[in-house]
Length: 331
Image 1: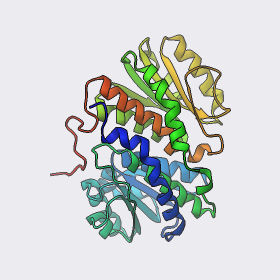
Image 2: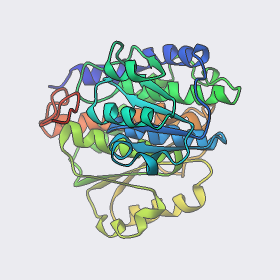
Image 3: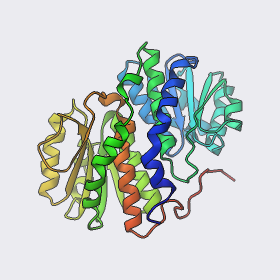
Image 4: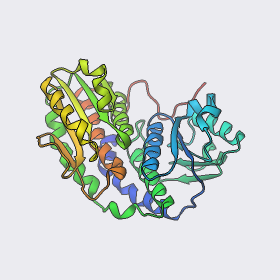
C-alpha cells in the first residue's frame, strides 16, 4: 500500500503534457465563444478551471455540471455557441445524457477525453483524445494533462502559445519541493484539512479536497479565501491544516488571512509563485515564469501528493478507494 499506481502517476504525469500541448497547437479550433465547459466530478473541476482561464484571457465562458445540463439545458447553455464536454472515460452517464440534449439544442460540441472509440466521442462534432488515462479510480495524470490541453487550446484562440511556459522538469521540481513538507505536515494526522483558492485556483482547491476524500476519506473543506471568514472560519482550531493557493494579484486580502488562521493554531501552507509568498516557512513555490493563469497543472501536484500520503497514513489504499469506481454510470 505504501507504493502503487497512484503514487507513480503523481511522479510521472508530466510525461503526458508535451502531447497535450502539441495537440492543442494542431487540432482545429472547432468552436466560437461564448463557451460552456461541462464535466462530472474531477472533470467538472476541469470545466470550472477552463472557464476561469478563458475569462482571464478575455473569452466569454462558463461551466456547468453535466447533470445540470441534462436536467435543465436552457438554463445551463445560456446562449453558449460552443460546448466542450470533458470526460476521462468517455462513458460517464451524465456526460452522455448531457451531450444528447446539447445536440438537440443545435449547439456544436467538442469532447475532450482520454479514451477513443467511446460513445461520447462518437456523439460529438469533434473529439480530442489524449493518451493520459490513469488506469486508476482517482484522476491524476488525466486531470493535469487535460487541464494543460484546455489552457493551451484557449491560449491558441487568442493567437498565443502556452508551450514555452512549460519546460521539461517543472513538475519534478514542484514535487521535490513538496515531498519534505508533506512528510512534515503528516507527522501527526491533521484534525481537518481546508483548501482555499480564488479565481483560477478555486477549481484546484476543490480537486485537492476531492483527492483527499476519494483516497483516504479524510475530513475536508474548501472555500474561496475571503469567503472562508463567513461561517466556516469559526471551525478553525489547533490540529487543522490549511492549504492556501495564492494568486499574485490577491495579496491584499489573503496575507492578513494567513496571520489570522495561524493565530488560531492551524498550520498554513501556501502554494504560490516565486517572489509572491508571505514571509513564512511553509511555502511551496511555483516557477516564476509560469503565469498564475496557467499554473494549475503545477499547483495541484502538492495536493495530490498530500492526499496520497494522508490516505496511506490513515491505513487506506489509494489505488482502491472505498465505495468508488473508475466510471460512474446511472442505472
